[in-house]
Image 1 (cartoon, one colour):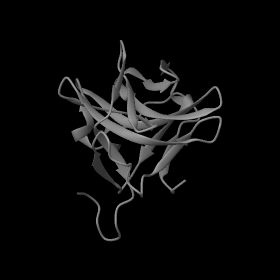
Image 2 (cartoon, one colour):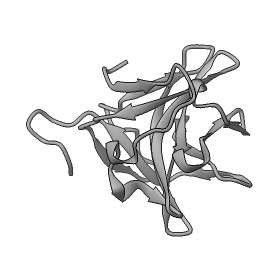
Image 3 (cartoon, helix red, strand yellow):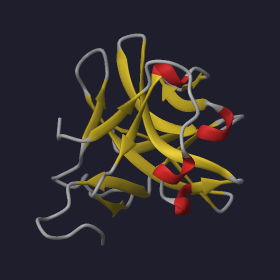
Length: 154
């Protein structure tokens, strides 16, 4: 896996919102890239810090974690989002941020839902995102890829 900086919480504590990019707010809550271990899988998804909750997808089931000590939050990432369209191969340089219990790589994906950008896992050419009441599967989405040297956004 490519190196990323992750915040790990050893106890329940308030996270200073100033540590995060304000463009990531969802319904006045901070939505940040997160991952968690669940049944042997390291799942990418997102956390709403105002709810102290993370949302993830595992085998078409929503996984909601309500304890920050279960989450790792991506911090100070300089990689870029690249658009993936249905029918195309995945880019050659995606950032692997998770894996299944069978060691299948998982990547961060991003989709727009009701005008809000939400994050989930990319697996098998689709992006799966958990919302509060359902799971979205998108064939066209953005995927986090390694930035070319000297470039931090596209």
